[in-house]
Length: 149
Image (cartoon, rainbow, N blue to C red):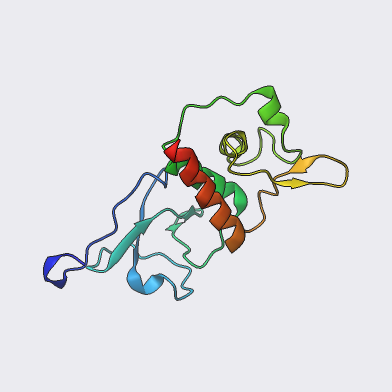
């Protein structure tokens, strides 16, 4: 809270991209899957999902691994990066058509993620799997180390 108990909106940090959504504090954490479009004194800002005609924050939705890769890349400052052929071949399930492919390849190239080694010897990222707590902890720790280097 600001001086005098006045509530202030959270600062946009550059982690999100494209647009910002305002949602009332009451929407956050209570499973409400809609967005508030009216500005109130208790608002927060964040990224969301755009449906046909409405942009929604969807605070109750889980984060999938490919979206987390994009968040981490942006958190690290969106560093200049062009994937090599070896980077593009690292994960059997990531190609140019995968959402956030470049960010996934960047995360692998700097050691933030290694994915899974499959029985056939290939590696997979499993981008549509939800991020679980242990993965989140590892991703954040490794991203911190990358940013400190």
